[in-house]
Length: 559
Image 1 (cartoon, rainbow, N blue to C red):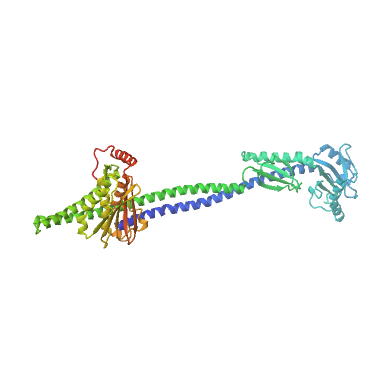
Image 2 (image 1 turned 30 degrees about the vertical axis):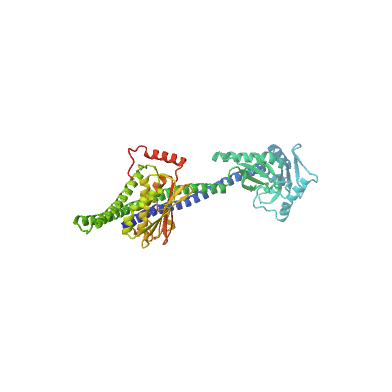
């Protein structure tokens, strides 16, 4: 039977591991997949944000690149002294967003000439900060012209040495790639703030909004001093806005930065939050599955243990039944065959038969009472009784068995007058008999049992003390469970049904009392039944309990 139980238990654990391992592997793969997904989402969101900022920078670049096309002059304007053609071209195209347009003929080394829109011609400027900034901007080109004057690649150049005067320069070369002149413009910073920036950002956001209409960030632009010069919405007073990315303009106004802020979390925060949420859900699901598995395993193990305990119960009860039956049969045969020499001997045989019959009746009563308790049909009949008389009567029924086994029993406190208690006399006799039976079974070589009666506050206490093998502390709470038998030490070697103490506890609780145990291995055990003394309150409670217990029953069951 033990091997079979062990095999079943091993089967349960194998099934548990068979489910746990795939679950752990699934969680590991899911963890890896979520990590990769969140990393990809973070990169995608960052790329989307960078694309938006890049679009703003590109729009600014496109605007000034288009504006700079007016500076693409024919070399003949300089080589043939046709500056009036440049003035006519400037006036015709009507360039916006600039403070000044200017040209410079590098061949004669003159200073730059400024275009006058009102007169449609060029003039020599006075010494102003703007003129000095333009002079500084064209100085390197003068040096290049004096050196060799060859320019392999012609494109629009930006000069921002003086942030107050940002200049676009376009070098003009002849067919031999030699510099002949310069055309330039001084940018209007105020126009850039009022017109160029809003248009560039608006166009970028319109394209960006098509891909994610729910994502509405704030774009702001900071100048070289870190001051916000433009924002799509007020940022002041909104601490919840998070800066997600920033980058400088790459063509012109390169010391300025465009920044994206959002009420949403940043890309890394979103990825981390998504990962934690997904992993939390996965872990919660795994915990629920594991909890269900553990619960099923625990229930199965409990059922197996209960089944094993029932099997042991059947085996132990069979042994318990055979012992008194064998004694009754032997002494009955002695009487039938006349194997006695005197009437006293026949009476002794009769006492043995009666004692073993009582023992057999007690065992059967325990089984029947347990069945009644389990089905909820156990009832009690409460009457006012003298507890001391009940205890003495119970001890008299044990006298023969105690004498047979060589036990000596001492009663303490039986002469003390106690108040009456409302009890079911048969149930209390059964409880005390079970405790005495345990004392006899587990006393081993010790042959002294003490039954004591005393009062503790509103309780009459019946104690049964032996000097037997004792009960370990970690087992003392379990011994009142049905079918439970101590699994270690000498206690387990003694046969028993495992029902006696469970029935004792049920009976005492039905009397609104309690049963306690004090024990140490090798020093014996003391079991105490606490029965409440009758008072108006307890009498009413007992009557109500009896009425409830007897409801629906045709007659009281045998105790």
